[in-house]
Amino acid sequence: MSSRAASTRSASGLSSRVWEALGTVRDPELDQPITELGFVREAGVGDGGQVRVRLRLPTYFCAPNFAYLMVADAHDAIAGVAGVTEVDVRLEDHFAAEEINAGVARAEGFSGAFPEQAAGELDELRRTFQRKAHAACLERACARLLAQGWQIDALAGLRLADVPSSAERDSLLRRRGALGLPVGPESPLLLDDDGAPISAADAPARLRFARTVRVSIDGNAAFCRGLLHTRYPESEASR
Image (tube, rainbow, N blue to C red):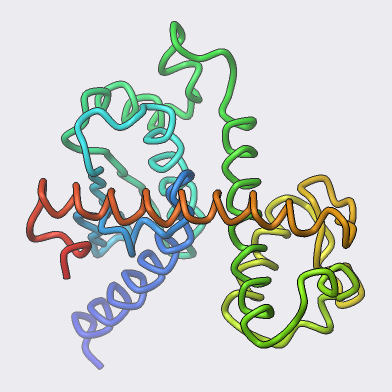
């Protein structure tokens, strides 16, 4: 194999790994990968391992804290890919793009990029969205069981080992892991965000609330895809 062919093959493999890494970055509010939402306009890899990524959002005025989270998470995800030597991630067509891009490049955090707006770092905001995602995933997993004939009060007695393998179960386990909740087979299916079991008496109300969270997330995701398609008709979200 010639050196040129080897270099091309290496770049192709790195490009795939970079795209996979970007797929782990989720919109913090919509709880979906930015690659599926169409937020990645460009992801290129140079011969020397330099990675250039350009991100875009549905509107010019998307909240800067949400935008900062995604840009920073994309930068960190790519930086952790073996073979990457340089990372250049930038947000485009956003009113605060200059501040966000500079803050991420300098690794100064949201409070460094927006000292007048930030009351600290974004950990609590991220935690809030992780809890919402957990509630939505719990509702989806339980809805699948209810559709299979389970009664809602019986769900409180189930362990994770009792739940058949499914995409909903896998998503629930990922959200639990993000919150530091137990994911072992003997762990109760119904847990609140702090890891406390949800009783049979409380299950109906908890799952009704979780359904409102899930419907809100799903609705916002569809709305954002529509806005992105309107703004960028060629985007992945329109296909």
